[in-house]
Image (cartoon, rainbow, N blue to C red; front, side, top):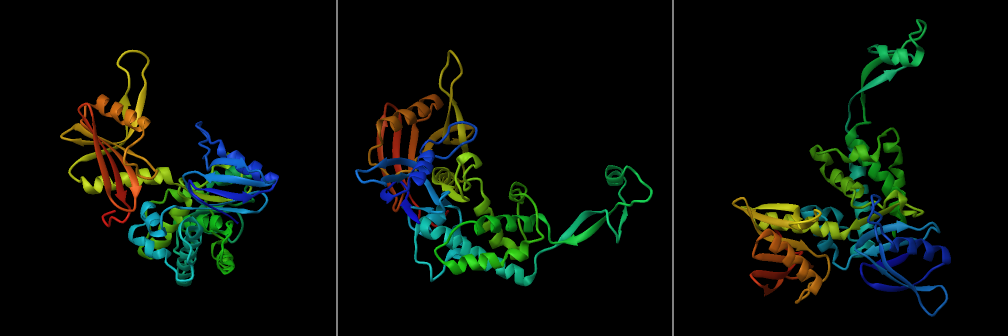
Length: 376
């Protein structure tokens, strides 16, 4: 296993094929495919087959075509990462005494372990069932004739019969969500081999549960006994986590885009701490008054009384006492175009820190938000 930590440089021995595959993840894409730039930098050292690798803002695990697994851990502790992922109190789901790893190395093992525990409990109680309209083209026939299906299948032949009936089945959207997450987790590699065995042992439970992953993701909620496994399954299948199909990787990957996750966290933090205000995400800002229309989007704009009063920009990097010039230009431009006098850069941190400065009539703040805040 190749163990990396986000934004840190590690020296790793790679085969030529592995180096080529990882190099393809340094490019990224700004097009419709949204290829993630998982690796920031891959550089050969003076030693043959040895490379310096710096990973980007992704946490999780994926497999190369050679079968070797790449695991990217977070620079934050596991419970800080659980807060970022929006698990809140559900982080207790992922506790297990035998797993000492932190961040990404332990994250996928912990998610899979929690999933297995919940899936075993659900299987023991029996999968939830619901009625589903079923087409029957073979005896024993039940229900009522299905005219359209009969015409499509047999062109109305009198010696054939097609009926439709409601049948009680476990192949419902809720179980399809769980089964889709189970199939993805089964394709990953884990530090604990017994965990892989327990995942495979659940395969017969979901054998007769079908449905595409995309359809399963749309399920809004779950009954009480499914609540925990429902949340874990959605976490595994969330669009933030999967490598795009065009990435060219040999195996299944689960990667959390920490830039987007941090942006979501800041949105929740703002709405929690400013409940009387309206917080807009990805707020459009016109950049020019005359000429071709050019727009930028601010991460967050706070409105009070129907007018903007502050602009916030989420930066997923260590807190800096003094922001760099590009960040100051960006924030001052947003504030000027919105006619607001407060602009804030929000960074993740282990403690709350803040530094203020002024640019003309705009008060600029660089704020580190503690991930330990209980309100999120």
